[in-house]
Picture 1 (spheres, rainbow, N blue to C red):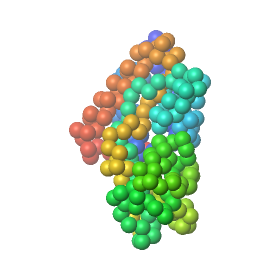
Picture 2 (picture 1 turned 180 degrees about the horizontal axis):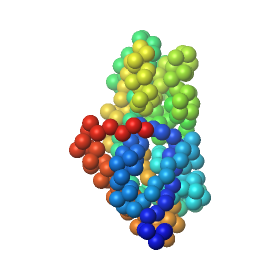
Picture 3 (picture 1 turned 90 degrees about the vertical axis):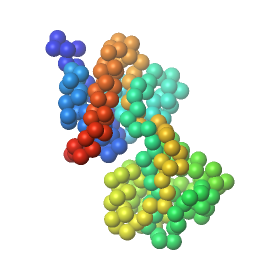
Picture 4 (picture 1 turned 90 degrees about the horizontal axis):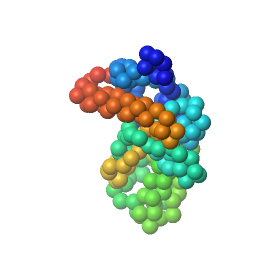
Length: 231
């Protein structure tokens, strides 16, 4: 901590995702500056890598799927989720084949293969659970972010579980939305801010300041829905 009380901290994220917008808004609109936090953003390429960066001390904060913080805890690592960035499941099932109907019941997934992010991601877990809720054995093809739409285009899967803006990109190319995970699962801790136990112990005020900045940014964004941040 510098004498100016401005703390230079790194925040690790998987990549640039629309669902991380509260963080971009907080940085762009100066909410972190207000809390005397100088936040640098790095892309790690994976939720597990973001948590690893927090554990190693390469990043103070990690933003992503909280499942991976829990997995680290099961392995004896002290990683804690201190804030939520997204409280719903921002995935839509998207199909290209017009014969794939709107899925209003899990049992309608019978005969279809769905592409998702790799296990043990929440996307994979919830999609597998949806199959089982319909009494079906999960038929899932796992793929990294950015490779799902090509699977759909090539016909290797019938449906992909995608995020925005990829959903809008797909529908602009003739695909159609067949189900919403948000409607199926409701409130859900989808994206969180993780911090190491050492940071909480040695610098307890850092997490509080980060969360205050994030909360203030979200409140202002909701009050000003046309205030656009380009990232």
